[in-house]
View (cartoon, rainbow, N blue to C red):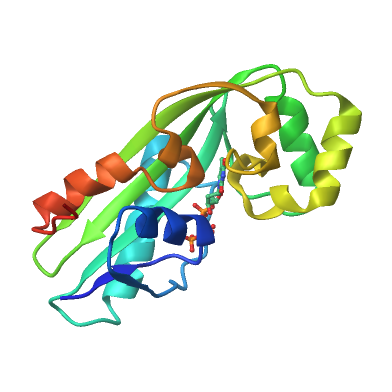
Length: 189
Ligand SMILES: Cc1cn([C@H]2C[C@H](O)[C@@H](COP(=O)(O)OP(=O)(O)OP(=O)(O)O)O2)c(=O)[nH]c1=O
């Protein structure tokens, strides 16, 4: 049995490595569509499942595949990764001074069953000056992150408080993952 992380995200690799998991990475060919007409938590779960199932179709039947999808939700509106600098500017401007939700959908797929769930973390962004947004954009950090910020990077300068799982914001809710892996018969400890 091999544990396979169906993700191109370096953050997810780091988080899984942090908890001593022995795994390999295979990226899925799934194209995300955050405009689908389903509630945000369902969207995250749906896309996590799609990524995991796509990879599962290419591996051995006894393997275990983990997929995840992280989105930012502000007043019911879903923010994925920004398409360009203008999009990132728009996201950061609207997140400033408000609380939003970071939702990660997670799926663990085996030949027997698909276990899936999602985790919500509330994040309050403080007031940000326009010039700070411009300076942050020049770092390039926002571009591959949902909501255009990275709590684990310079984006931490904007985060006033969080309520909930930190790893969930970075892209992989480790406590929830452990719960799903146990159901699939995989123990990390
Ligand atoms: C909010 C936030 C998101 N992110 C990242 C985590 C995810 O990599 C990314 C959300 O995009 P995702 O579409 O969830 O993941 P991905 O495209 O990077 O990787 P894959 O689909 O192959 O698994 O945003 C941070 O790194 N820090 C943060 O604070």
